[in-house]
Length: 82
Image 1: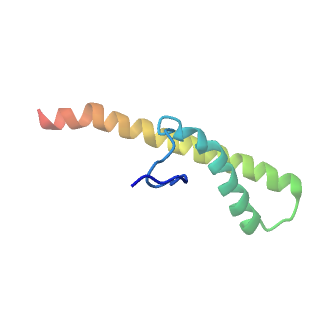
Image 2: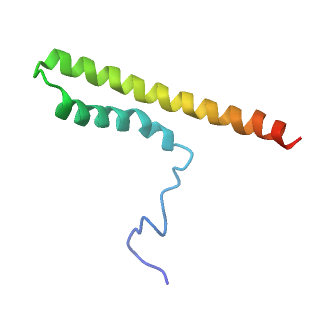
């Protein structure tokens, strides 16, 4: 059956190679929401500094996790199998 409307779950956009570009905006918005709720002092200078620091921590943490998993699957798994 052919549909005339765009159906995202049946015909997703061919952007599977570019999904990682959403990492920085997603980390930024998560940091903004978290710091907006958790920060005790309502200082704008402290808020934006905390948001930037948390965004960098999230991005670096995910990159380190990706490198660690890559090293595990490429080097340690074959070593265990031999």
